[in-house]
View 1 (spheres, rainbow, N blue to C red):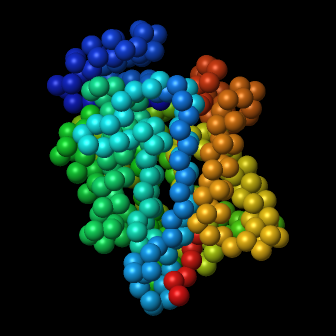
View 2: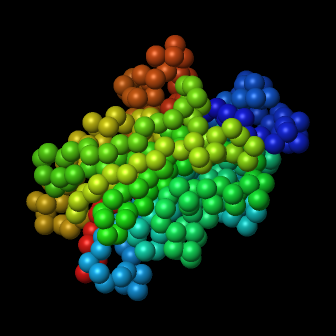
Length: 337
């Protein structure tokens, strides 16, 4: 994917030298201005967790919260490299990152754009962005996703992390049951109703934001895209609605209809087996979707959104170019008793 500016001018010459030491000229495209970067590792790392708010984090006013399950699957061909930098281990998910707040009100995903090197650390950028977003929700009690994104971005700028990242942050108004979201770039979210029935409906969906093919809007410390450019959404929700956040590793390799079909089948199986939509079940669903996404990406004959976008732009995708890190947060609107 392409970095859209955002590299501090004092780092460009050093970055060029660093990249040439690590990559062939073939893998570097127009360094000064736009970097078309592919990030690779030699092993696959999958992480998944379930999240339900602790009892002491919930008010007892019959308000709603999000029960969540998450999964992160790293690009299966990524080169092993040191992923501990500035005190942060960003090995989980590769350049992708996520957070789920302790109180079950706020969730987010981010995707570092470009190649992480000694000087350009997009993985560190995305992980710090989500780490600070979680801190703002947990410690300062901030629920407004626009405020969280702005403050987290300000924190990154103060630390002068040279990289860039897309971002999607979603929060649930506990009393009005309104889902408030901000999205910048080609990560995004879907809101679904009727999971557990044969008629799952898509009630809300973010729109990807790209400058041009394979170059999403992205936050960077000296980039033209800022949190103010993010699109905002207010979506009414009902009990048991499902909210899915994903990075482009999901949405590039699965059509919305595929995602809905899979979740419909999963929901019906849960009902037939009398299984509640708890965090562990949501985690398993997220894991399934990450694996399907990477399986689709590995099949050069598979019709995917990324292939269609490339065809429209007369861009010839190289084998394996659709492969990516995949990070998913799946949440259910639940009632605190």
